[in-house]
Picture 1: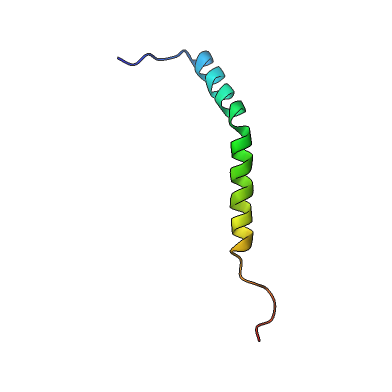
Picture 2: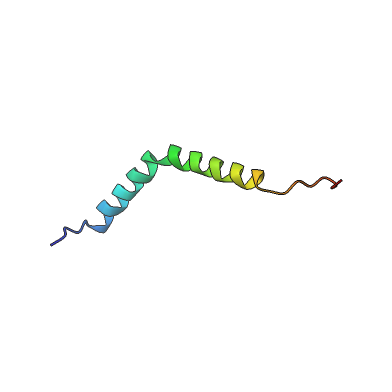
Length: 47
């Protein structure tokens, strides 16, 4: 039978996990933004 954490403990655990993973979130955001910018078609005139 799974052990359930009380709400306060679960929120604290979630906050600690989020705080520990913030560098990964930032890197992922930068990578996705760069990919979106690079995938845009060029805006210049076509020959």
